[in-house]
Image (cartoon, rainbow, N blue to C red; front, side, top):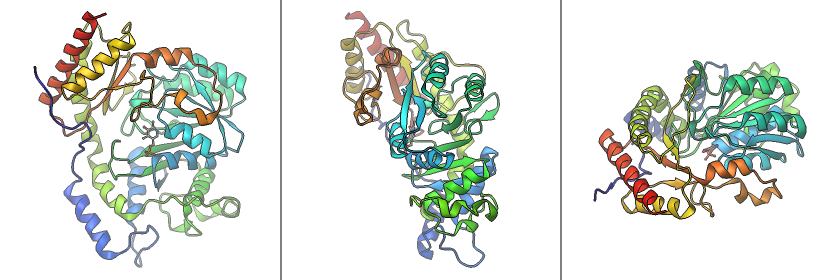
Length: 399
Ligand SMILES: *Cc1c(COP(=O)(O)O)cnc(C)c1O
């Protein structure tokens, strides 16, 4: 029996240019973003300018993590304690955590069979909950029909905060993910599309939102030093009215990220080649359901998701365990207890009593997920896919 023996958590090395830039920062001792020599632009300033240019928006703020960026984005967008924030029920734990951190109350929206937010349920809850904000997670890189989402936001006057942790580099109808909302957040944590260990990037076109975000991030009164930012007048009243929630990015992380950003589009193409290989093999199995993807969606598949409809808990467990036994690490979102990143809405009990979401439970019940690190080759991916298909077949035979 063939076994796969590489690690699913082994990312690529930092590019040599990033290592050299990081060494230079360390030799200078100027690790803090505002600790610059005369006339020097810090690594963080340069990263912000470069990421804003990549996305095609004027403003970018680098901060301590993606989850922190979401919290700051909500505060800067005007979320007040007690406000309601619409949000996908199928998302990762930092998302409800960020809403909770802002003092707001999440209104969880159902999940459609393509793993995206369910548009009819979103419309219904926008109408009935009184929420004025939508925190939209493009969860695991699946982009909902953005024309329809934007129409819902317009009809109900929703401020849109995009969580692009899995869509850095992706687009809808040629427009980059993160440019639809009033504000967008990205993560540069190790398992996302750029790796600085930790980190987050917030982007917007809105002057006063950006001014508030910069003050929130802990700029003290040094906001005029930001390059990818509105003019100083935008801070006139905001600087007295906005709390400092220190959470800046440092020059070391930015130095490591800049050469990776220059490589991002090539990386995304590699992810998609590996994903296409795996997806084609899985889709040929009669038991596997690959989600429908709209032709308008240009995704970045740094992970793969598929469903095994009709499989029982025992069969799903068998697939996960048998694959693990052969070195293939699958995560099961239907697992009764959260494992790793698969925590489900019913694990976020600090939120209080949440209404049941039967459609989300049904979709997550038979949803499997696998990371695709770029340290894998095309041959690795063929082997992985054949192991999964074998084990799915074996589990199907034992009803
Ligand atoms: C990773 C992630 C975030 C942010 O994560 P950090 O670890 O705080 O950078 C937010 N949303 C989703 C969906 C994520 O996967």
